[in-house]
Length: 178
Length: 447
Image: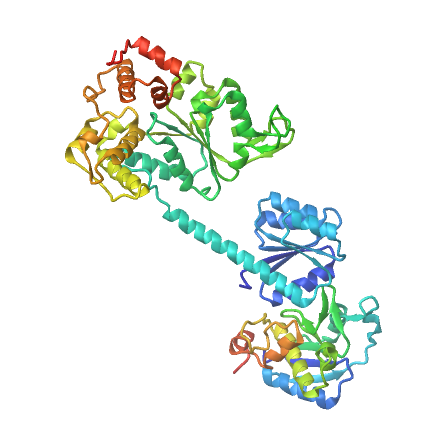
């Protein structure tokens, strides 16, 4: 793990400060250096007019072109609504032990559920989704310990129930130093 | 639970397979993928999968047909059908065929999680059920079979040994020795114990009735066949069929029976659909079937088909040491059923029973004890409560005719020579009883 790095690719035009906070959180959780790159990729080709969403699977495939250096774990961050062929929506997805993952902020916004805007909560939720997907990329499966960030979440309320941290069992399994 | 459950994804679209694969693998399940039904069936031939998530529309064999094939492989897998279009008739068909559920793509992530959690719970329950059944099987005993004699212990060991196999069994023994009890003990100690034990008393039925009883019939197959009826072979599916008095079946039925035993398939009377049933056959007879084969009365091929295991139950006179145990057992059984205090038996009565030959075997002893409890003093069974008459002390050197004569006379005297009542007790018609009275030159003491 010491050889690896995490690369965040900004596909959502997120503010520097916002991304910096997220990167700090990731670095602390995984004890790895985190860098950020901007992307100006045109997302329109990933748009499915029938579902009115963006194809997460296709995005993951194309993000692979960024991984010229195999020590990188790459996660693309989006503002758009993502789907995959079997699910109505996804907060994020990543291949187990893979190098690529995606995470979307779209369904994490309080406004989506008729609630008042809450930027702090949004940042926290997004951070949890990103760490969760990175956990999969480091070989972690869903965890049954309630506060662990690797606990499965199918609703946004589930995300609020867990912390931003990996439990000790998951840390040990991922080989993260305490 | 996750980690133990295996899931097979069958879908012709790679993106669907990949997405589901990732979803389940991240949840800790063991996942395999197949791009068509043929590939899925080949995976299932080599290993069991707990849950199969199959697309309904695939090139070649569709999901419903694949589901039917899976069922014919006798796999316990839970099948969930996926489709891109919600079609009620297809959903109903899938459920009718035994699918666990039906889900329309794309799924709500929470619905998919729930569905798999429910399927996993079902699998856990099945596993738990299986474990409990195995536990029960190991605890099963044969408490109705009483006896500590060497002969009886030999029989019980044989029961234990043959119970685990699926081989046909012939139980031979005199009338009243407990052949049906042995059949029950074999069944209740076998893996088939949770399926029915179906008994057929072949001797009590005519050839045509037996045929309909064993194979069932279709509505209108014969006069009076108002409804379709399942036969005993069909009812014994998964369990055991007990054919009592097998020696009495006609040559035609012997041929039919041989065919069914060899193919495990049959057709209902008046029907045309072949029915398959998985049953074990146990037969009983008080005749010497081998001698009947030699005399041409019983088919040799059927005899060898049935006679894989032969258990001979010794008559009670060959195991007189079991009489005290049997007496105790029947006293407890009948005192309990009549809500009486448990009685004792006095020494003289027991000694007399031990000396008696019991031509009617255990059934005769059981009837004697039941009667003694009814007529006795509610504390103990005395010699006078037992139905021994002077002159009936030994049967060893008496002919069958002498015994019959004594028995008929005893019954007639007991009922004041009322022919109707006596015939009813002896279980013959009045004309037969008159013929016997004439034959044995019996006379009423009042004449």
